[in-house]
Image 1 (tube, rainbow, N blue to C red):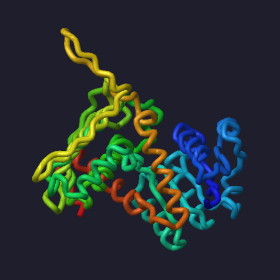
Image 2 (image 1 turned 30 degrees about the horizontal axis):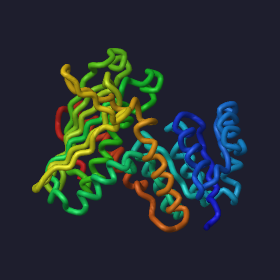
Image 3 (image 1 turned 90 degrees about the vertical axis):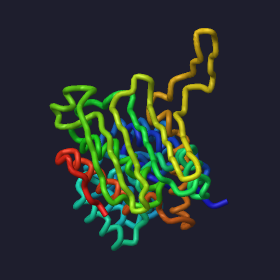
Length: 332
């Protein structure tokens, strides 16, 4: 068996903790270092998994650490990708690469020039239910897909401090669904339409954002995708997919707290969906790491790639323009 691949995690926040734990537990990986601007956060996470605390400079200069997970604040992603690419590292970066399409383009040019391998963190692609639905589509089990419906609703809005730097609903939340639409249908859309409102919290409107949206995508094949988003779902994390095709339909339903269903004279009840993304996508994060390890071993190309990350951001920007103008945006 090949030696475990040393990986440094840059960023010891919520998602950094998830990735660090998965790396530490995977037999094909080793948590080589934890980096964070807050030393106490880095030390706490590193001690939990028996890893050292290093600076980003230390990590990038260490030829014995061939790969990095970038889990830092969004405004640091592009620079860290460029530095890691220049240092010859394999790179995993949480979405988005940056909130500016121009900055993303400059970053991806560095990745191309250096020949670095960059994988972007759209974890939902790796959910077992999504993978099974995608495989059924690829196998032609419902013929040509015609209508895709994606429902994505958070249990509640994030803090306003986060919203102010998130890039807005479309770049922060809808971007996952835009990537999912392209992944499932296997093509990029021609047009994007969007309508949105602030129905959950008036403070979100005062921060210049929206919390409820519907986005419609039209594809060259003729397929249509409809995404519905909300920052509020009183019953838990609502994540559902439905693809209608020429010979049938495929659905991926919510993952619930348990499979127990109670049936009585009063009615039939089941458990709520899992609370949020950390619970809902545990298996997806593990599969995402496995895919990145295959990239590190030279067995696969990065997917989602930097170009796919750019496309999702491009579509998010188009959705925001469509919302503001009331006009469909051409994106082909």
